[in-house]
Image (cartoon, rainbow, N blue to C red; front, side, top):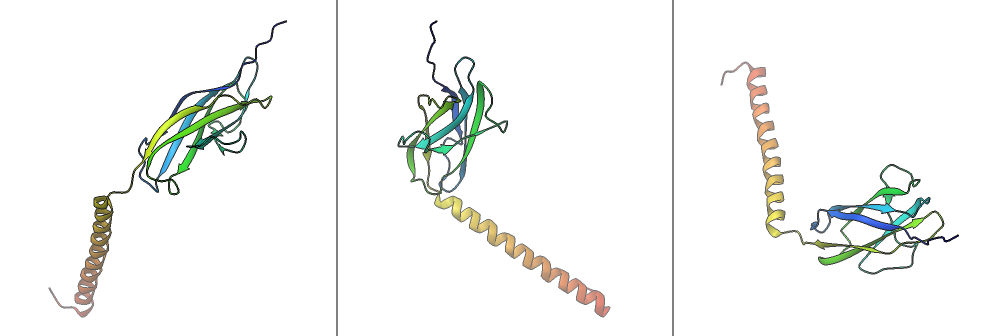
Amino acid sequence: MVRFQVTPGIKDASISPEKPVKGDKAILVASAHSGYRMSIKAAEYFIDNIGKSGNGMPLKPVDGVFDSQKEDVMAEINTTGINAGEHVIYIHAMERDNRWGTYYPVNFTIVEPSASGIIDNLKTSIYSEWSVIVYLIIVIIVAYFAISGRRL
């Protein structure tokens, strides 16, 4: 009897957004496939450097449990500690017999927050605070005239 040694593989992997701003979260999704009559037991990823199998960052099964020949997996990546620039995520999966598959690369780029974006956020925050203050002053003035019986 001839038995084929098929290792699990990753297909259709992507990251969204492809160019996250440093400090934002990015969502990594992939589809893991195992060999005939096998099931996926785990999936993991490494950023830029491939480490020892089993020591990477885990991907979670979308349906909540590793129990199928094909598993859609995902991970939320916090980009705060990753330097700005181009990077590669290496993903691979493991079958129930503890055999890891080959790595699938996904390219992405971390971008620095733009100065204009920071200034726009600051302006929005300041305008928002001032509008609350102005609103409170108007309410106080109206309440004063209503209580004192005076007309505007």
